[in-house]
Length: 167
Image 1 (cartoon, one colour):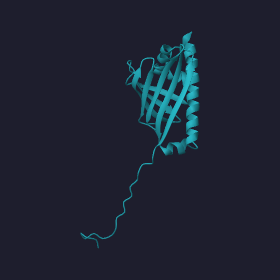
Image 2 (cartoon, rainbow, N blue to C red; image 1 turned 90 degrees about the vertical axis):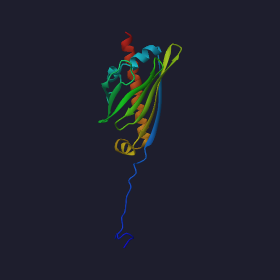
Image 3 (cartoon, rainbow, N blue to C red; image 1 turned 180 degrees about the vertical axis):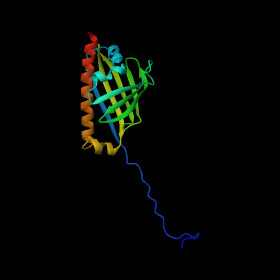
Image 4 (tube, helix red, strand yellow; image 1 turned 90 degrees about the horizontal axis):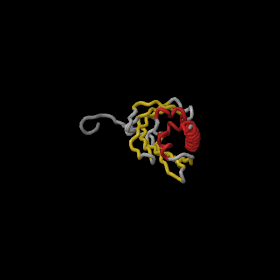
């Protein structure tokens, strides 16, 4: 008998969440267009489905003409997450926060003028739950490689879209 008249033992199991894996990506492409044109196309959120690869789809949830507060639902591999513009600098950068879904983190597009052309760069910081990797990818390297392939296709589609709207 335990002090206070209690009999027996009690076991408490505390379940800690699995540690998140951090993925940081950094992809860039030099485009033969001035930053003003690149930024205009990048800020045309309703046009994203025309230049992103078909396995990534976008739905505009909230479109704000001043950009900050614009929200998109991003659908990838039958899952979705929400992206919100939290900051931008005209012709220089566009900052996203990813919330409410299987991706949470942030991503930033930056534009750098180089001799009348634009170096467009996308950097992301994504804490990814290990179950997502286990469910959809062989390992962390596979995740990083697939992300890079998708971004490469997105850059190619973006460049093609810039050429289409030039004429």
